[in-house]
Image (cartoon, rainbow over all chains, first blue to last red; front, side):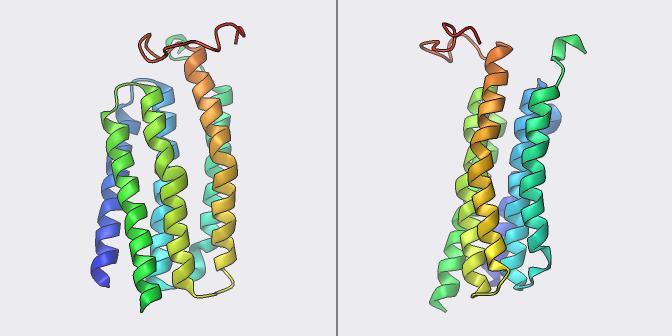
Length: 87
Length: 109
């Protein structure tokens, strides 16, 4: 059973690393916004895997908060951002 | 035991989906394609992992908060996708070859 957790943690870590590469590299701000959005989703997945692995529900309120804060952050950036060529 | 196996399969599928989406985010050429890849772990993969964790908690009261997280995600993901897609369209960051028929051009937005 431990193998399952190791595999899924490795997959999620690799996914987070690739998404972070796109977030750092991305040519425009919108690319970075998409990257950060996916990164938040992957973080929620990772915390859920942690909850399933330890059966310890300490971080569950954090998961709910993360989903809402990620939404507010993305919408705020999409609303108030400055165009790249005007920076 | 069977419950454990079901939860493990769900969590593995969700993690695999997140990984393939990350590959798509890195390799796709423009922003709209990357959005298309990025919305998969945001809804489907995350909900698979959440269901797996919910099964693994075996009726613990905090399982309800995982259901709540899935609900929030289902409600908020389309809003973010709409905002970001409209932003990409408005700034003409998408290439000419991406859109076959430009339905938004007539509406002047």
